[in-house]
Amino acid sequence: MRRPRRLLAAAGAALVLAGCGSVHPGAAAVVGDTRISFDRLDTLSAAYCQATIAIADSQGKPVNPLEGVSSRRAVLGALLQLQLARQAAAALGIKVAPGTYTSDQRTTQPLLDAVGPAYAGAIREIIAVNDETSGLLTAIGAHQLGQDPAAADPNKAISAGQRYIREFGTSIDIDIDPRLGLSPGGQVIADSGSLSVPVSSEAVTGKDPTAVSARVASLPPSQVCS
Image (tube, rainbow, N blue to C red; front, side):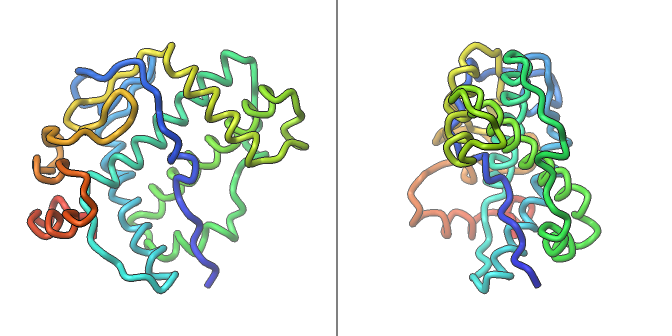
């Protein structure tokens, strides 16, 4: 079986957000006029959890339980970055045809098979988010470098695109529900509160890697990605 692709490849870039406060009921975040609902976040996060397990298993790595909130934060970071990339591209007059960034089904099918039909639809959406973000970042970065996206070095273009949307994000009104425990810079805040979905305060406190296993072990099953 082909190795399942790594998800949310573009989500690792730090997000510079204009604000972090109360949002509309049921919204995990609001980016300008775009609302990201908790329902969508929870659906994608559950699938992302299963995907990380499937990828670790396919690579012969131990599958260790994770805090459920970690999956939500990873997915939310990807969704926020996509919205910023879309809005930045629109502001620059950049359009990217879907066919230029859609993943080859042959590379994604093994992962879809691994997570099963219950999560396949959500994984397809996560892959689409990742693909579109990469395509937009490449086009934005190439624009900033004065290059043709088709001829630009993908890594350099994406890096330039990430730098641009970080700066662009400072001019956009962005609210993240405080219960997600993320700072205006997209970093985890210690001692934050719980999510509306079941995640206790213990699940979002502390950054010491050595404490993660003990913290996960103390959580009820509903709060663990396993």
